[in-house]
Image (cartoon, rainbow, N blue to C red):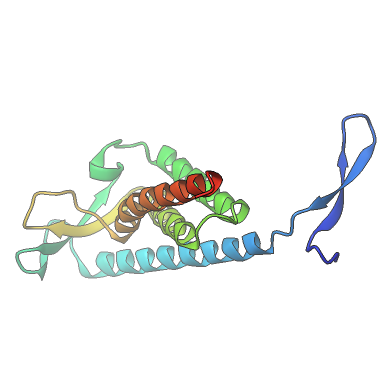
Length: 188
């Protein structure tokens, strides 16, 4: 490998011949992609384990106090998306989850200048989406079981927590990253 950390590659130049260019060394992107996959897989595992425990221990329609006055465990099967919107559109939501996970992995791999914290948050969002997609494919509905008692709110699960909090955190981190890039470009 050349000392620059780049390999020479042949690239068609449009005239029928090829030019030799240096290909960027994307070892950092590969490491970040591996980290992305590990975090997403951990979120999926946590989500699926919690859902399996809820299905084994709870009976639909019979809530159990979890944190008195704050939260119950109440097993429901949701065929829609957040807040039960989109009833019956499960295949569409599976495709959306797959697209978001693939996009997140691609961004984590290609944008080596992106903060690692943002890549990890995108991985958590992807893992949550995949966790709910697994339920949609395997069960035809998403297993939800966290029910707030201090406020009337939708029943949710671990994947929903990672998706909701992750999207919020990703927006904040992306904004901070973008602002830092603008400052750097302006020479500040």
